[in-house]
Image (cartoon, rainbow, N blue to C red; front, side, top):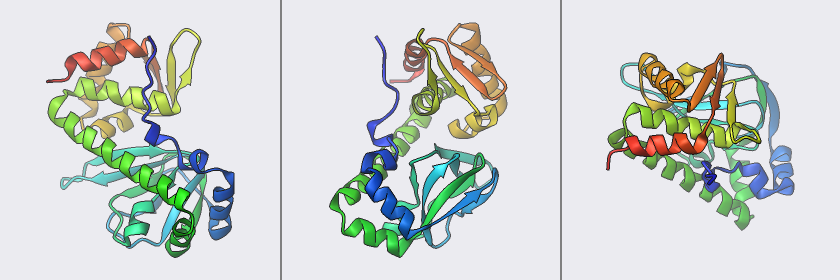
Length: 232
């Protein structure tokens, strides 16, 4: 039996709202390019723009008191960022950095609010995205308490495969352009610990790895492996 590893609430904003509203966003904003490693917005800063990702990908992250980076999410074309701080008119809750080169449309917060306030369907989708991300954050906090690192690694790989992976006819899913370091930063674990988990998964025939490449050889088996390691 196949399984779906992507939350419906995580479907990008663009495909959900449709091309007409996206065209309005583009008219209200300014399109610009970004480079890998470029800081697009900073945690704690006042909201200025909402960002609509056109191409490339952006990682959203925070830093722990001791300086370690924790990746909260990776977002790509069609995704909307900083919508919550724009609606709440409060400081940004995280930072955003280009994972790759790409382009975004930056929409001033006041213009974004004007667009969604007069379009109830758009507002519904924006709130749905916010709620979905909050639910995912709650699930991940619970995972830190109930799952070991192995389960967290497996679940993150399944999440990435559902969103960014390539599906093959034999059931394999292949993820490219994601690093082991990013995986460790996404599950709040050391790179050494994550490497040990990846070695275990490879030895069990559930995974194979390469440079910036993860091949889920049996996604359903990987999900079962993760569930077995989750504490009740």
